[in-house]
Image (cartoon, rainbow, N blue to C red; front, side, top):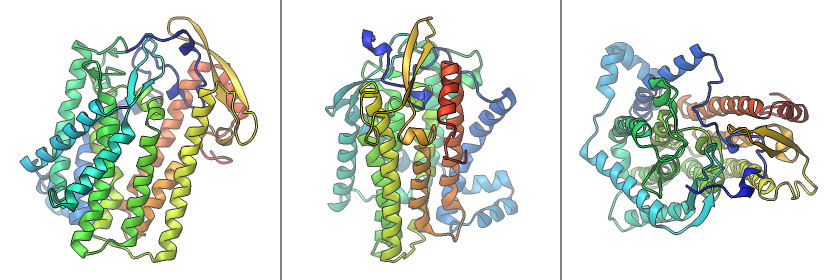
Length: 459
């Protein structure tokens, strides 16, 4: 990591998110009560792995019906019923996972990209990245489709072994998180590492802020972006191809679902360097919550609407399909424009135009962990004047629009939308709590200027 330049101390603005601000040197204090914190951690550690398998089984083998899966568990008992449907990892599954992971790791290391410096850390480090995500994304999808087109590899194999792949990811990623925990204790990559003194918290939230293997291979960029987000795109294409091979055609519902997800993921990789300034990278450490979630939860839960549509093709008709597609694209664009607006505000130190006029802002002072006084600019106009986390609204709506092609025969395809809503509302609260602690009276001024947390006029 590089040491900060003198000008790096004063950022172009924390915007509405503490995630973009300098993270704390020690593991963060919890924003909920101790009981809620420990209960939620233990529940997620124990319930998320079986839920991934139950969701796959319900989508693929129980016709998307939660009732059928419930009846199976009631008839056989929860433990025996779960054992009966839980596929064991196979050699084929491990080959697919390691082949994909190795391919993405090589692209991350070797593809050219511009140098990008992340937010200054409390230890005085500046994480340096190579911004080549968009290139890796293009190479990945082109390679995958070419392999299918020329009969070298059939993506339907991935779908046919999906349960085994998820099972392998559940166990393999858990072991990987143990590695991260041990590494954080014995070989941290930088001074931005520390222990809370509690094994469960350290394992769940992580030890290191910027863990790396060697000098250049950033682990969180790999788990979050190059494995998690990239697998989402690959599986979206996989489901589309599987439906084509099963039915000889792709339903318009699947086309809308796949198109919107790929547009969203394209937006992500276009903006990847901006993501490196958000909470996931600049504040949350590399532990079970982030790394297991990106390596298992993303390729299973986030792709679940498409997984459902493979066996449930819905014919929307041209008018409805086009309407849903355009509505989803509009939401994705607004989500992108929110982030673009804030990035431009930061890049120009507030000397830019927001919706055709000079931006409204608050100059906020704060103290670093070393006792130094710094300043940040808080944007209070444009999208960021509507609510403090308005960008979450179009993100949730985007997820709804790529799920709604499944229509409403079953509830489960909408689990991702519900999960995302809970996740982002909780994240908004955590952001606000951190900003309040950091900026003090300036954050109160900001909240008076922008009173709504997420939904303008409501919440």
